[in-house]
Length: 65
Image 1 (cartoon, rainbow, N blue to C red):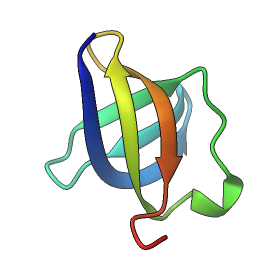
Image 2 (cartoon, rainbow, N blue to C red):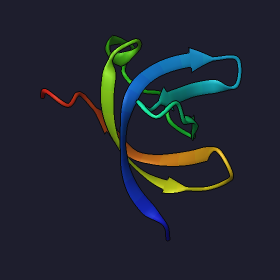
Image 3 (cartoon, rainbow, N blue to C red):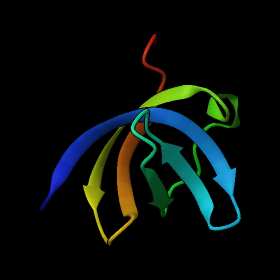
Image 4 (tube, rainbow, N blue to C red):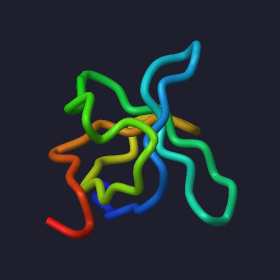
């Protein structure tokens, strides 16, 4: 498995939920419905890369929690 931790802003896009990093990378999150309170905010996500721009999230949370 290719597990990694990413940080960025959580957004809802036409392709689903995505984390947009400070570097401008857009990662679409598969099989996960994050807490709506996190939308539009910075998050930390522990994920497994599942495709070119797709991630499966083990968890998504606030960096200040």
